[in-house]
Amino acid sequence: MQGQMMDYQLTLTPMLERARRLFYKKEIATKAGPAMERRTYGEMAERAGRLANTLEKLGVRRGDRVATFAWNNARHLELYFAVPCMGAVLHPINLRLPGEQIAYIVNHADDKVLFVDPTLLPAVEKLAPHLKAVKHFVVMGDKIPETTLNPIHAYEELLKDAASDYAWPRLHENDAAAMCYTSGTTGNPKGVAYSHRAIYLHSFGLSMADSFGICERDTVMPVVPMFHVLAWGTPFVSTMVGAKIVFPGPHLQPRDLAELIQNERVTLTAGVPTLWMGMLALMEKERFDLSSLREMIVGGAAAPQSMIETYEKKHGLKVTHAWGMTEMTPLGTVSKLKSYQIDLPEAERFAIRAKQGTPAMGVEIRAVDENGGEAPWDGKTFGELQVRGPWIISSYYNDDRSPQSFMDGWFRTGDVVTIDPEGYVQIVDRTKDVIKSGGEWISSQDLENAIMAHPKVLEAAVIAVAHPKWQERPLACVVPKPDFKDSITKEEIIEHLRGRFDKMYLPDDVVFIEAVPKTSVGKFDKKVLRQSYREYVLPSVSGG
Ligand code: AMP
Image (cartoon, rainbow, N blue to C red):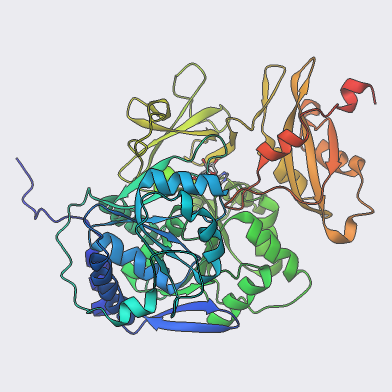
């Protein structure tokens, strides 16, 4: 027997319509210089209609790709809805990638129109001769500035001349709504095409109380860029539930973030750990009233347990650790305590919360060991994490590297993990970062987390260095806090680790560096470090 429910397509149009009808008074605030620019969802929906009319006039048809080269702001949100709801495909570009990779992805995606923030014009001007399919450039401001881009239009001028009514077409839920490229550090980025259905279901995923619980009463500040996996889906879920949004624009310094949270009474924010480490360092020196915050979502890279603890113990702020990927829209796991874990001793509670968490409803997980068998959920056995579900990629967009990323209908994440009996996933490493020493695997992330708990340390990255006997040994690259630059020593770092790790896991050496190199989305770029220390001779080898 078949179920007898409507064949209702899961698309983004009802989200936009809902915001227009129910939440037209709610605010979307963008930091634009020292001042805030304020709009409502009512205005956003009206302007999305104008934008769709405009795009149609510019020749954009169903399935065409429309690129954005922009920071987090209200105009970007209008594009987030106008483009998919008219049946075209939104393509936010990671503006921090090297020029040749940006040219590659714009050409690979065959972007027809490119929207650009005024401050980012110079970068696009340089790339323009290499962008083959782009027919129109639109600068996201009031007027057309002095520029070599051609043909160029100004966003507000286009909108002014367009009708606000737009007959949104009926779309199929499997139509592509948006695409992002991975920020992989090897080879060209790979394209991921998100369907309307995936984003729709993922938005429900983010609104569940046991994940981010985003609801109408929230004021959400997506610090994660709108070009990094669609700001982790926060713009969509916020619109769906009518939460106020605060966009930081290009203002991502610790002070900007702390002031925005304080002044706009932000309740939930999301971003990579480095941002929050920076804000924590600032909060050691200055006071801000961040009492409105109910939750800080930290993901994209491992959140050190020491950071989670310091925020909570010193500042009363709750950091929630989450894991995801571009290929997963991106929600995978969220680390929250279960009801019967709340009374565990403090150390155990923090240890659970520092794991990457349990899978969100909609995400199935398994860990696969070196022999292709499923690793037990014992919290000890390493395996590669594999996932499946309705918002997980089924193949890369036009890319012959696809097959190696899948195994029997599961997506291979490339993350090495353990899964404990309660279902909490702990990312041990990326497969390429794990240190292979004499048949044992050493987790670089475990060492980093422990080193970053040292009071004199700001950041630390641990990499593998070649060793004639052991094959690889760990080298700790440590950034001291500015006040301890001259007093920190190698010995105290090793001493600090000694009680926590078996002798064979201890780094063979410690070097002090100015900063850990970062990828385009703010994660530690260990490839660059490995390159710098390729020839490094460890004291254990030189006899030093
Ligand atoms: P991206 O597609 O840029 O979001 O990168 C996804 C990768 O980032 C994952 O496969 C992980 O290796 C890493 N990652 C994301 N979140 C976390 C986390 N909470 N802890 C450790 N690694 C993470």
